[in-house]
Image 1 (tube, rainbow, N blue to C red):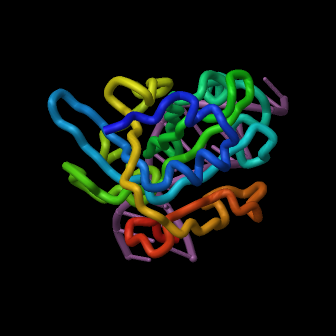
Image 2: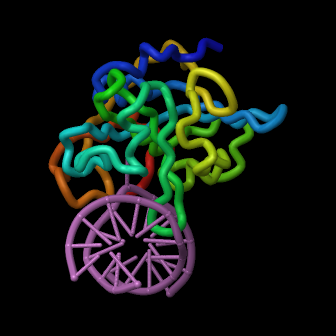
Image 3: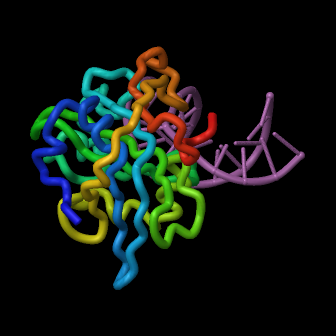
Length: 178
DNA sequence: TAAGTGATAGTT
DNA sequence: ACTATCACTTAG
């Protein structure tokens, strides 16, 4: 299992969003490992009206401005956590929302949709700013498969909703329903 | 299709 | 303090 290096994340957010498809998200809890394959992502940029970073650094959005390769976890709609991977070089904001997983190992409940994903992997604010290159939440290289990537509109946003910044693996059954 | 849920951010 | 909004989910 090869963990993705920090340099993987320190690039253009859209590139990272596409390349995270097919990678393994691994959540370690004690000796237990919950593993899923990433099948759906969304890119959020600094100069992006739909992004938390759009109005500059705030207490919530600060992780998006910091070092790439860390988690940005936020709480939304009074019920759900969403997991992002921080992208771009230090000082430039960017993040990839990890929307859906295909279960690989020990995934006990559905992980299609960002809220379900964090519930299935027991991810909450305690993992905000966690280092995705080591520790209890990491992302590793996937199989050498070829995927057709479908670009699509992002879900649940009211601004910049025409942009095709959502990406998913064509034909995969675990992409979130709309 | 609509309601629920509470943190967040911007405004008084 | 107050309020609108929100990168969602579930029930109906």
